[in-house]
Amino acid sequence: MTLGIGVIGTGAIGQDHIRRVSRALSGGRIVALNDINADNARRAAQEWAPDAVICDTARDLVARPDVQAVMVTSWGGTHAEYVLDAIAAGKPVFCEKPLATNAADCLRIMEAEMARGRRLVQVGFNRRYDSGYLDLKAILDNGTIGDVLMVHAMHRNQRVGPNYKTEMAITDTLVHELDVHRWLLDGEYVSAQVIFPRRTSKALPHMRDPQIALLETKRGIRIDVEIFVNCQYGYDIQCAVVGELGQANLPDPPAVPVKTGETLSRHIMKDWKYRFIDAYDAEIQDFIDRASTGSPAGPDSWAGYAASVAADACVRAQESGRIEPIEMIAKPAFYSR
Ligand code: NAI
Ligand code: ISE
View 1 (cartoon, rainbow, N blue to C red):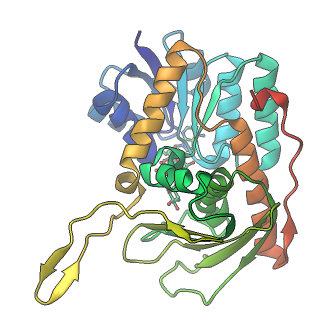
View 2: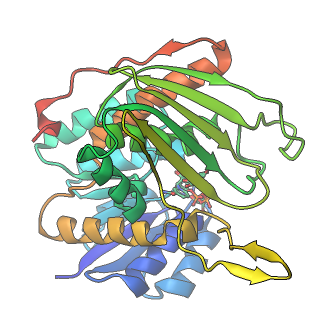
């Protein structure tokens, strides 16, 4: 069976996922597109999915009988509404991160999904499909470095545009880290603090950049994450986990070391699109495979909720300058199955 997929939001990552479904993966076909900027949808169709219908509204797209699964790749603040529409229609939905820009909306999504009685949502926490992170998790799980004490992480983007606000360093960027560290360590957070080092002159005037988030888990593990979204030189994701017996690092993506003119150099990637290309392929293929035969199995609404609760605390911490508590509801049995 080929899964008919409708995509809401045909910007950077929407187009990239449309391309991978149409050209790189198997079992899925893009049948419908929607974007508040209809030109974007038309361009995406022209390039990657010429047979796809352009829908006037996202609701029309979700209601189409040939749309068997939905992908939400619009701006973060619009995700909750569209995910709820897909759940109401009983259709599996892949939602790019964040699941919602606040925990209250994630709760509404979980309640709607539980009321339908089956898992329908997969959140785009692509790092859980990245071979480097999977290898790192295997090392932590098999005890090679002993009990974990600390994590030092770094999330750098080359630059961000005028629509990117200081708060998005948390809701749009740190949210990857908030998910991946609780997954890596298999533990929940209890508090967060955000501090601002000296501001880079390379950021647009409305933005405070860089920032450092300091997280603590229930077991007392301390995680520091530098978020620097105008670092200029490229896309750079680092993670070093320190245990009682040693340290394990996230590997850099392979790049040929080049020696010329008494210099040794290696290319650094420009952005997320190439850095995590294999992980995006794997997560979307997983969504297609599972949605075709039943329910998605990748990162669930609970993961989306947990990351959003922590993100809410970090946003509060940005404003207060204090250590803010992170408190989650008890995990519903539905998400422990
Ligand atoms: P973008 O700005 O390039 O594209 C967003 C598209 O959504 C635009 O075409 C815009 O017109 C459309 N849109 C906005 N509001 C809409 C609405 N109400 N209904 C329909 N369409 C609407 O943004 P980008 O970079 O593609 O990001 C989209 C989402 O994907 C964000 O949530 C972002 O956090 C996530 N993302 C995830 C990445 C990852 O590594 N997993 C990488 C990049 C983005
Ligand atoms: C973007 O939305 C992503 O998800 C990228 O992976 C991240 O590096 C970037 O900071 C976000 O804006």
